[in-house]
Image (cartoon, rainbow, N blue to C red; front, top):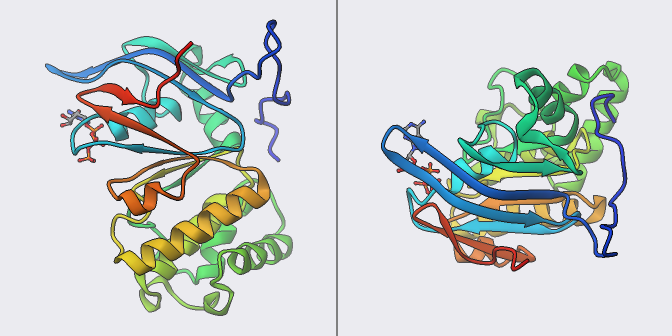
Length: 242
Ligand SMILES: Nc1ncnc2c1ncn2[C@@H]1O[C@H](COP(=O)(O)OP(=O)(O)OP(=O)(O)O)[C@@H](O)[C@H]1O
């Protein structure tokens, strides 16, 4: 774990209930005249797999980026482990992202000239892990994601589903507290999508990693513990009641 980790275990509120790992209130964000987020409240609890669904253009990616501290809302707050992420400057948010969060995108964005295992070592090496140990841990993660036999292949030699599982292994290798995934199966056929989701959720549940993922696909959402539906920048289903 990196020094940038925000210390503290899941805490209890004064009332004795568990405090969400991520707590967002009153999020509003506009791009010019487009109101992408129009007053969103979200709680994400430690260890849960949460799917954000909704029509194209409804604000899903914007919401994910605000929760992950990539974008700053015009109004509203995001708290991570009770630290107000929205009050941090860019450097503070960057440290938090590096230390606590992992990311997977629709197209895994593996480095094309590096083998699968070398791709997975990258974040470990950046975090200061020695090369030998990084290789060992990368192999363990490829095994967990079911792609160990492809570890020496270049991304171009992998199927789309295999490449996404390598991308998930890379995102989880530093053992982030939260994995943010934006359409992680969006480029795959349905069988490959199910295999990636199965591998992703099994690995996340085995390690207690919290997952926030965006998907258009109901079959992908079915792997989540909870679904949040966003329409026109607002949550229409699954938001906090309190
Ligand atoms: N950088 C940006 N500049 C201008 N407008 C943006 C920007 N990012 C998003 N938007 C607009 O904000 C709204 C929400 O976009 P967002 O990408 O969050 O939706 P989405 O639900 O993730 O869509 P999709 O499912 O198609 O990826 C859209 O109207 C989009 O055009």
